[in-house]
Image 1: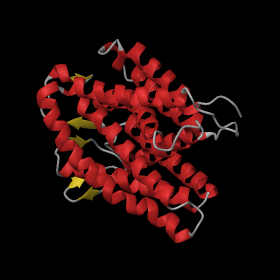
Image 2: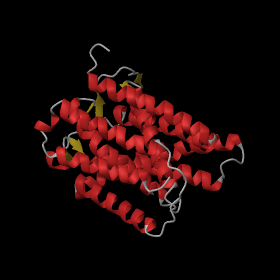
Image 3: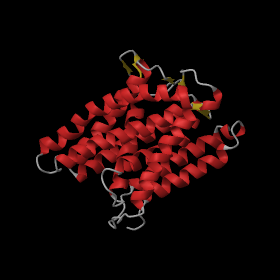
Image 4: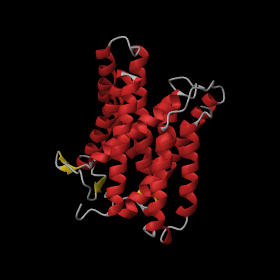
Length: 290
């Protein structure tokens, strides 16, 4: 662990532990959920490789498990983090009693509720650093708003294509079908992310990154709110990870904020990060019960 700062080690080990635990939980839920979890991790790694090597959007700091893939190094825990957050988000939206076509919007919003706290801390601690030139007024604590658009896009597309697949091929019909649906969904997911990134870049030149993000997020929020207003939430016991994922991630980030003295440079994070944690916890734990 020489040369790797302690916050890097902590977030990496916690995320890898989460990934193992969530993989086991997915296994208990059946082949379809396990295949979806594994596919989400693979998708997360593929997206990171694309943005690091092809889009040249950012670069990573030092971590323990840090392989070089296609000329760029992508820490394994980052792909696992995508998988954990997507798994928890999709489980949460499944319990909300909303139409499956709206669930990807909810999944995307739940994911970005964690990223709003994660990325400012990651930038400050050097976990990763954005190399694409962006005007300061289009950044959120050193993080381009394009990053948050990316989270909405990546999680939303993954959830959408996986849910389309399972809507057409009911889980449990055949084990091989349960495996092929999320694996096959990776192709349109990756293509959609790559194509939409070019569209976002064009929109930024006209509307700026914060405005584009606000439009996309507001659209998803309105769709989710309209669906939740007529939802019939599931009353089954709530899985432990729907509480643990937001609590552990936000808790660690708040811990780093204070122990590393980051609040001294960004005082407003002392207010914004607890608000993000509250919103995230409410979202992942909705609906109440169990």
